[in-house]
Length: 191
Image 1 (spheres, rainbow, N blue to C red):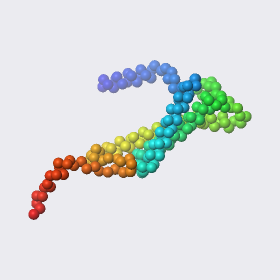
Image 2: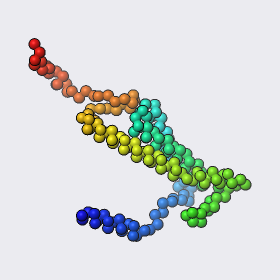
Image 3: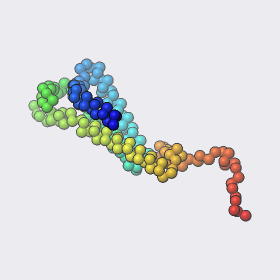
Image 4: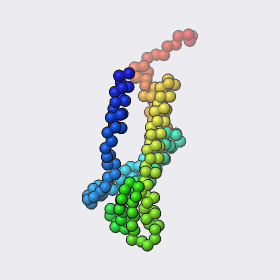
């Protein structure tokens, strides 16, 4: 009961004292955006490698690894989108934005057509790619945990089962010690 009161107190404290979260990060200087872009690039490459590794080793036949593969795919798309939008925002000069409020932004392009502004607007909705990536990552981790627990329940010792990533198959390892192999087998009842 005391713990419940303490948790309720902290929840009310957090909800009762709102302050700006400053979740939007602007990259004012050139160095900041370049380092940020390099981070997106490395994340992109690592997700491509993860996607290819899961596919080549046949791990995508299991639903938990397939979820990781979907996660990697969405993260690849998100990083591509983010790299392009950051380039358009900060490095190209093709698009100028002015934020008036949370719900109002003015997008100006060098083009007379509204198509580049519309494309830029939809590309700024990168959370529509990032959130599914996070969901599939969570789903893959959940399914791995469920599979691990079911191995424990079925009496299979997870330490005896090794997942060999080279072949993408699981093999039962021999845990019999050398001394046990040398001992004569019990032949009781055999004449």
